[in-house]
Image 1 (cartoon, rainbow, N blue to C red):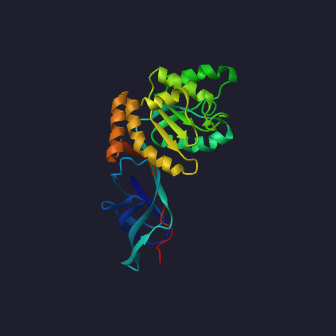
Image 2: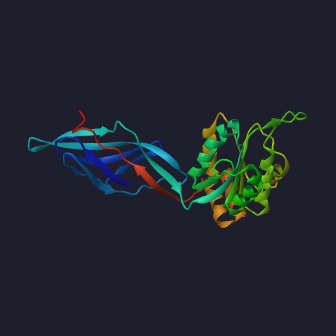
Image 3: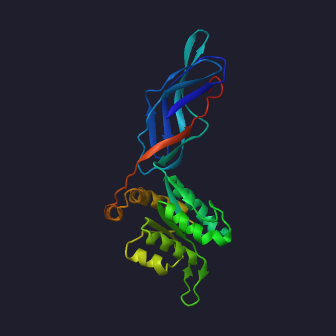
Length: 284
């Protein structure tokens, strides 16, 4: 990452001893420091961060720094400060894969499906759902669904409750979700099923789960952060399955994760970030 700071005051500033404070740790930027003339925005240096390998998405941090101000021909030590503002970096795995997401289009489905789709995108996937990212006339939906699944690298199904079975009293999911999962399975696409805890899977998805042909992650609509944590353990391996098509390797890694509590690792790189500016000549 690169650090630029702006001096909006009328005296010279010298900043050093930078630290980035994340919720997962503090990073000291020992190689970054410099003098900033008044009214200038100056580049102070580059640094590389060794981030946890299962970390993705936007991460907020605060900035610590030590500041000297040039006053009346001498440098005055103003001490150490923490920024009032919060900044962020965005972290995504690479390369980007296309994933067909089978999910409901009704408001009650999208209330859960939209944030889940964003979690999936954080793991370096471009999500495609016919009726959301792709719009076609109703008569062309079946054909376009087949085309999008065929051109995707993987399929993820989000099973949300649609109707209650009168005989069993259990919630069932969208009927066409079974068909889209079937298309993906039929052409050997990597599959992942995310299931609302109230839903009882039936048909092909239930067989795939039972025979360990597709992993199932259960989620609670009132605890989406738990789903985010669960995805952080599964998605690196799922990306590997998508890249290599080696299904057994994914299941082996998942088994090790469950048995030994091991972290599944993936390649993560910082794509973009943002730094704010120093406001005023000094903080007193």
